[in-house]
Image (cartoon, rainbow, N blue to C red; front, top):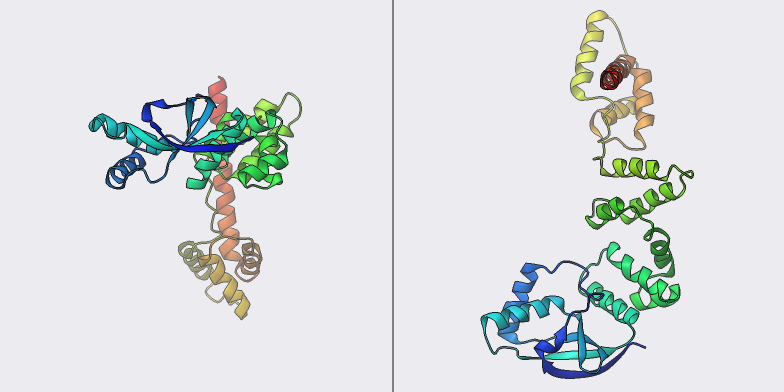
Length: 293
């Protein structure tokens, strides 16, 4: 059972680091420098948290930046902080790992990926999902999602998530696609999914620009100077929307109205777009044939 055994004032050199209990992010040099100045000026206002696995065998659990700052202070100022205040806790390894993660999460906006290893570790240590959720102040459903997707997550997806290039929702959707792949197709599906995630999103193509609309309408008037158009207010609103507003789910409705009232504008644009796509497809096929040859 995890408990705070006592508060103590101990020799700094007694505090060790355990290979399975470590900071969940690389130590930030700027944060260390801040603590170094603050501790020199005001002292160690918050004690280090250490795990007493056996009598006088103490491992750091919380305060990695402060510990590094004190190490630097001692190197530059012999005799400083030979002893430090600590909160000594006891418990099983899985409880200490959970406490380590909780202490880190309480001090910063922890990323979901930082919970993966600890949640899986606690689950393998026979902690119930309810116990894990309660200890980490998360919902049971959130814990279940980690246990479902994290163990088999493609490392490339995990890196994208860790670097905040994709959201947790996108990572889960990608994992579902891979899990749902037909037997034998998992690797191919994973490669395709990762390629999609790594590719920059294609900005939505505006159906019509003001410059091309003016040019196409000028060509239509030159071909038939007597041509006339009967439009309503909502037709003009649709034209202005297509020309100026960002592409969204409502754009299709405005595009159809513009097509009915000003067929020269959009039909010409679509013909040009389709021709460009056909040309690109032909170039790609020719390049593939050349590569095979």
